[in-house]
Image (spheres, rainbow, N blue to C red):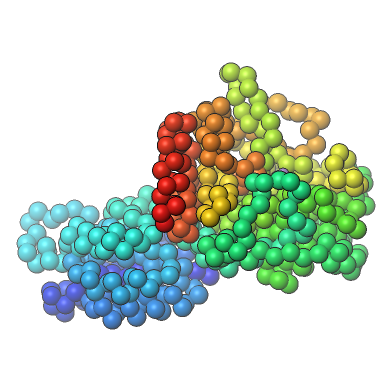
Length: 490
Ligand code: MN
C-alpha cells in the first residue's frame, strides 16, 4: 500500500533572477528527488512536480494534488526567495498533508566561489522564512523538517513523516466492520461515530452476527484445510484438539470474506454477542491482525481503527503492532512493570518467538474453549496509543514504553502477554495516563513513534497528549487544562 502513494516535491522560486537560475533550480530539484528516492530512506516515491513562480502555478498544483488519489502529500522547499503571497490561494485549498522541508542544495558555504549570484540562487535561509510565515499565518497543519537533504537522519525524518501522511490517507478511507455493539455499560470504548467520520474519515458500521454465522456455515472443508496449512507453517500446535482450531479457521475465513467484500480493514466484536457461534474468535482474530486488519475487543471500534492505521503506517517494518490491554501490575520497587494481554486477541506480530496454538476455557461468555495463540512479546522501545472521545473532540494519548522479556514465565496464564515499563516510571506514568483519561485498550507498536502519532494527530486536527520520560503529573494536568480551554475556543 505504501507503494501506491507518492509525494510531490514543489519548489519555490520567482522570475526575478532570470531563466538561467530557474533552469538550475529545476535541474537541482530533480537531482535531489532522484537521490532521495535512491537513498532507500523514503517509504514512498517522491515526485518533483514544479518550480513555482506564479500564483496560478501554486493553485494548479494544489488542485491536482487534491484530486490525485496517489498523492499523499506535498513537500515544499524554497531554493531561492519565493514571495509567499502568491502561495496563498493555493495553500488555502490544500487538502493533502503538508511538509515544509527547510534545506539547501549545498552543504557548505563556498569560501572562494560565494558572490551575489551565488547568494541569489542559494537563499533557502531567506526563502524558507518567508514561506514559513505564510503557513504560520494560515495556521496550516504542517511538519517542518530542517537539515541537509543528503544526511541520512534528515532523509529518515522525511520518510517517517511520509508514513504519518499515509496514515492520514488510510484513515480518510477506512471502513470498520462491527459485529455486535459496545460491551454493556463500558464508557471509554464508546464514541461519536458521526463526529469521528467528519474528523477522521472512518466509516464505522455494523453487520449482524447472524450474517457472520451464515458465512461461517458456507465455508468449505477445502478452505479450512488450506488455512490450517498456513497455521501449521507459522505456529506450533500445542493442542491435539484440531476441531477447535478448525473452528477458528472457519471464523477467520468468514470474517475475512465479509470484510473484503465491504472493503473493511478493521473489525470489532464482543463476547457478549456471539449468537450462533461456538467460540469467541481468538486465533482467528490474531491471524487477521497479523495480516494487517485492525481489531478491537468488546466492541471497541476506535482501537480497532487505530490498530489498522498504525499497521498501515508501519507497513514493511518488523517490530510489530498489536491491539493491547493493560491488565495487571508488578509493583515490586526494583521491578515495576505493566503486564499487558487480552482475553485472547493479541497480534502475533509482536511475538519474541514462534507462537503456540493452545486451547483453554475462557471463563466468561459461556461458549466453548477457544483456540488462541500464546506467546511472549519481545523486548524493545515502543509506544501505547489510545484514542478517546472527550465529547465534542477526540484526544489521542501516546505513552512511551520500554518492553522487556516478561520477568516471570507465568506458566498458567493461557494468553499472549507483553511486559513493559511505562515512562517516566510505572506509577508516575499511570498517574499521567489516568489523568489524561487513557483507555485500558491501546495499540502497542514497536515501529510507530510518538512523533509520527503527533504528526498524524496534527494533520487530523485532534488533541494530542504525549507521556514521555520528561512527563510529570503536574505538567500533564496543566497541559490538559490548557488544551481544554483551547479546544473549546477552536
Ligand atoms: Mn478488552
